[in-house]
Length: 297
Length: 269
Image (tube, rainbow over all chains, first blue to last red; front, side, top):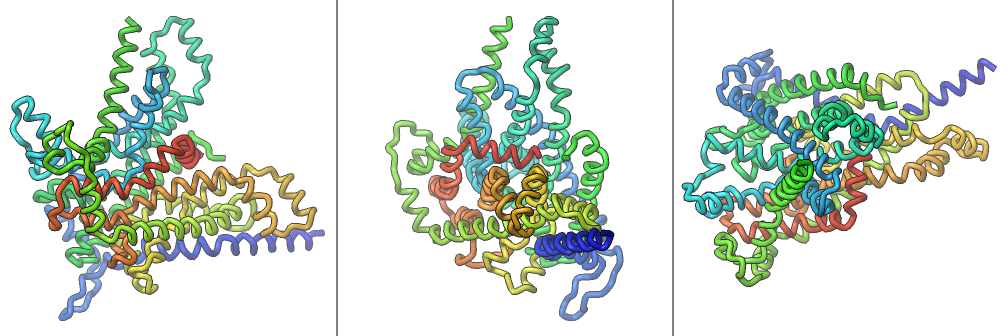
């Protein structure tokens, strides 16, 4: 009997590993191994024809910390995250509350909110180019109606990053709305009835009952928005190319530029590692803290 | 009072909707008008298809469409196979080290393929897959997200069905194929919609790995076509943009409910 159980257990183990093998191989090839080798190559100098690459330890990191562009890019990205995350969550929440209430043309409203989500970032950037172009763009035309001077939104350091931020918010708010919409529909009707009987205003009901119940959704969206603030950089290629004077450059764009425009892989690797560390901290917080509240089982 | 706030809210909701849709509407309108009419907001100006003719002649769009189509298909097939096998293993097979491996897979949710572009580029080149559609698709096939999704779907399948199929003489593979896969059909559909729209729109990685019109997907083609160096005017860019978003946009408008449900199913579980 014990033999039989043992055999069955061993068979399950073999099946398990066989089933996982294909995915495991690809994950190792394109995620785990590259993470480790990125770390490894971040410790070596950039090889040239005269001087082969050699082990330099933390020198690449030290270079970056001494590089004003790096700090500029980090600051930009912090601002980018600091604005896009709360603003798109707030907009997504109002969108969901509206799209869930009994308003006329609800179908149109929902579609309008969600549509940017299915567009490629590159296409979104092209659409917004039409708004931002100095002189000819929609914004300038509207401004000239009120006698405002033409503004080169993408071409001046003060506004370039903000123009990029607006496109990101436009792109992701509708996506986040859906998660709120789903959560709103799980809130039982009797809570609303109870609040009505108690004479609570709609505002009180929203603030005291709806918002707390949406908390897990908000946290989920927050993690997604945080990842997006690292990942969503495609529109930079169209709108500003990180300029002017690095005013709108974000970390991932800088990594790309470092590796594929300046051919400086070691410094790109060092930056990649720093991004991975930040994402790793986010992951650790999510799995250890947040998942205690929201159960997947 | 409450009637007034209701009106204000309705107005706000509609205003936001109009603002949200306006970039798309403007571009659509500009695509069908001459540049000077478009930038002057000449509302009564005649409609024209010239921009589409110019745009179409300016780049091998048909090839780009085909490349994107092949790319999303290859990725989807790869993902279906790999995530089904792995998801099943995590959901229904007990073996030592399973939980540890699952945590490793979850970690990959945060190791974004986008961030690892430098090493993945080296890896794809080493494998001889540079400038191939397979090279663009490979890093996305073993999707941790997909494995997670499939695991959740398979977990919900009652063990009785599993046992019944086993009594009938089905092997592991037979049980997976005849019991689990059909029952998880809604999850597959949801995952397919999310995957297709993600990879139809993906840009950075294909930009790095492709180097010729024969492999370049639409997004990369569009960015090259619209580059300021090419001096293409805004109406033509709008036409090209409309062309490249049309298939997905039309599909979305027609199957809106399924799309939204798909994103929900994929995100919530």
